Image 1 (cartoon, rainbow, N blue to C red):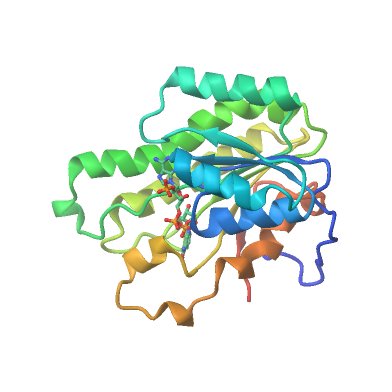
Image 2 (tube, rainbow, N blue to C red):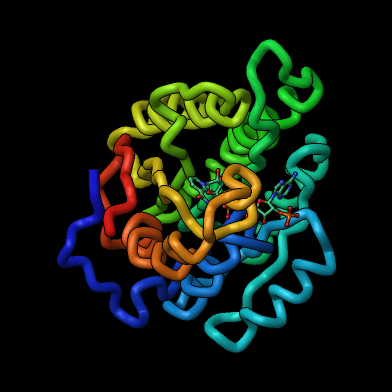
Length: 248
Ligand code: NAP
């Protein structure tokens, strides 16, 4: 599916919405977090690095409602840390209106035969298992919103496998499966669940995957803001269980 061509976000289209963005310290997540705030959202900025989160918080403060920081290393976090984060959100906001699963790692571009086993497990954990755990913890708070959106980030290798994309590709297949199962379970509730493939975008991850590519030939994270505002905001109310693609 594509975002309707005639969708033009109003300047306050995210007003009164509390949205958690994972992997907000760099790349697509950082830009989307900034734009959600500019459009009126209270953004909960997730990352693992305290210094990066502080600088992001400073950058976003003043653009919109006061943002908050949610520090959690998705590779290492245990149940207590997820519980603590959930309690903090509950105490401060009482609900959650949006959850953008954006954080991710590329892993290695190598054949399965040579794929490092520990790295495989880390990639699957960060890209898939951590998203499941976070979703499971936050579902009660999402259920308290009258109009909540869970958005998973997939990839061009999340529906058809491609050589040397290893654990990254397999994790994105898993993400799409998780989103479909969850969307089906939450049908007829106020929580919608969709996937979005941002496509080739000028970020650190893309540069690691394609080191010989000229980044200037790629769209910037700023070019993705419209679909994220559509999918995380009230404009996509009622749409669930879908996979969206970026369309220029
Ligand atoms: P990126 O620039 O590498 O940013 C990834 C983000 O995830 C960073 O904020 C990073 O935090 C965070 N992260 C990684 N591991 C983490 C961990 N263990 N705990 C907490 N945070 C962690 O990547 P991107 O290109 O913006 O990608 C964003 C999403 O889009 C990913 O899901 C990716 O698969 C998807 N995607 C990207 C493209 C593309 O062309 N860029 C295409 C299709 C799909 P640190 O700064 O701490 O590392």
